[in-house]
Length: 235
Ligand SMILES: [Fe+2]
Ligand SMILES: [Fe+2]
Image 1 (cartoon, rainbow, N blue to C red):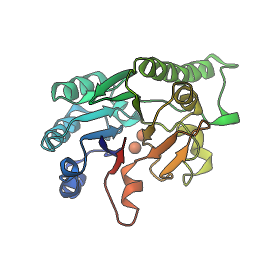
Image 2 (cartoon, helix red, strand yellow):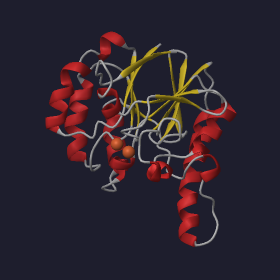
Image 3 (cartoon, protein in one colour):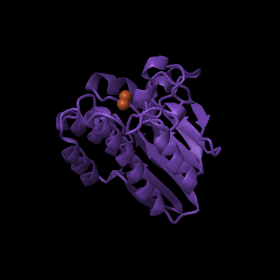
Image 4 (cartoon, rainbow, N blue to C red):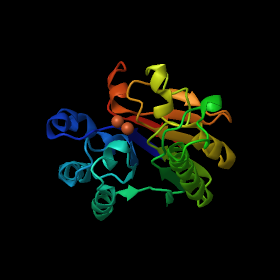
């Protein structure tokens, strides 16, 4: 299966007009399109509606997770409903199988990497913050344990490794993802991990277990030569 992937569209009509032509080729180049979160800027249905209109016209199956921006207005449930109604498979701690390829996805959360992972110690506020991070790892665990397909793709918004956030300011690494997610991926095994969120990170990295991780934030893809708006992976 050829999987096209992008993230961080941060929809605005103006921005999308510029992308339209390039996105129009997805159907020729891929069998499925993955959107790894931050589809909107402020998480408003008024943003999602025109985006969905454009996405439907691509006439390609779409698998998506939401990003932090899609939560900004507290309307994430409504956004997910709108997407599902248009046939987009939204993964939120859930799995989906198509043509022998299994997709497991969740938004993920912040929390830091490796020895720098924040732990649940001290104030209740810290514990609540860490709880949110662990909850997303548990959701990924649940999604991955549902996979039966031999080929497995993990879709996240936040990064599971520090490797693909390199390029961002080191001060914000802990807010770009958490290796708690990578631990789950390594435990269950996958062929490919796709994420976004780190707009100025690095294209590729690997988990400790050697699983390839790709940052498909569109700003990062557009900086490449040649400039692209999605990448295509073969699984
Ligand atoms: Fe983003
Ligand atoms: Fe984000």
